[in-house]
Length: 238
Image 1 (cartoon, rainbow, N blue to C red):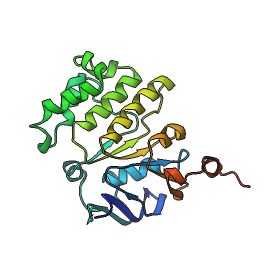
Image 2: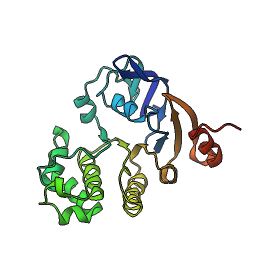
Image 3: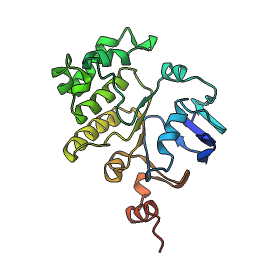
């Protein structure tokens, strides 16, 4: 098995609108793959399709070599495919600790709930300080920490992360990305969708650029020419 997760000519959309089509992407175990691109490129829709939240119109998704396109979302979570969504989507009336416990809902993670919670508190000491505080009263940065922590409670084999820096200050963005660097060093497989190209490239092993539902660049991080990437991103011509 060369790739932990891959898609073949995958297409999806909403109603009569096709958002992306013919996407064939690969994600290697233990590596961080970054998907960058402007608003409306189809990045978030792609992640939702990987999670089974949107039914593809064509193509295939393979997880560990097996077709996954018909698997319901809850089976994907049980198998270790976890998404940290754009906008946090926390249970605002529940406490920080209760939100983390909700992350341990999959049966396989319940026995290790306390161990995983302590690990999250080690990564995010601020969450430990606020463990009894309602999630809806957290700052934007703290809420993003909690969203990441809740995802880690599910013991992800592959973690799909959607726009983690959205709405955060530069200081808090640096703090959040320092956590992703730690997770990368621990060999977690990460698929990161992010508009902050500078931050995203710092932790990437492979880079995809999506524009208008298509991949227009696919290169290992060390091969990426920043000027060319910027020109493609903003659709500048020579």
